[in-house]
Image (cartoon, rainbow, N blue to C red; front, side):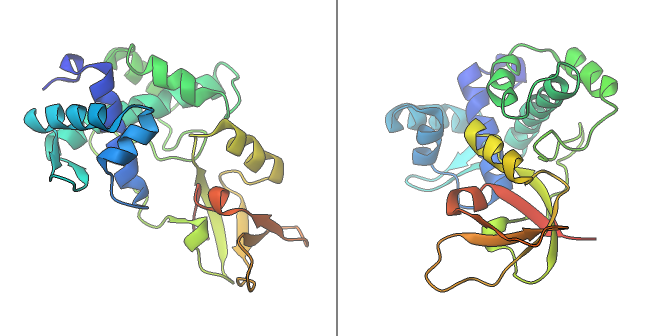
Length: 225
């Protein structure tokens, strides 16, 4: 099914399923999709059913939702478009990284592939968006295999912050205020007894920073080269 034949709602489902699988924090479920889209579980279930009938997802009753090969191909186009638009808004139009997610959510349903590819050329074919999320190529997904959530990162080794979730503008402003930006080098301290947060120290700083659980689950790191 061509992307143009999918409704905006169907496109949103595919993109969210892709992102959920990419983050691999937990299986994507109908309930999770309903929560992310602020819709009822019955509406989300009906949307997933239609995608399954179109051969774009596989969904066992009361189980998790997975993209088929055709679904991954369609979702990659949407994710690529969204992340290129975010990059364009930041680098060309001067938006802040906390301002672009909602704008890109709207624009991604309207721009053509021709415009998307021209934006890509204008930007110099970026590999990642302003939040550090990998931009799929036209052939395949970008590699993010070495990334782990900060909350699961090993203590005592130097790491590079690779990306921050773009879902919450307040979280992005919080991270920017602490210097937690893509490319930042940091190390994680050993867990403290009864402490809920993750203690990190940035390169060049003596004092540590305690990161709350919600933020630590929205930041990805990888081993420093």
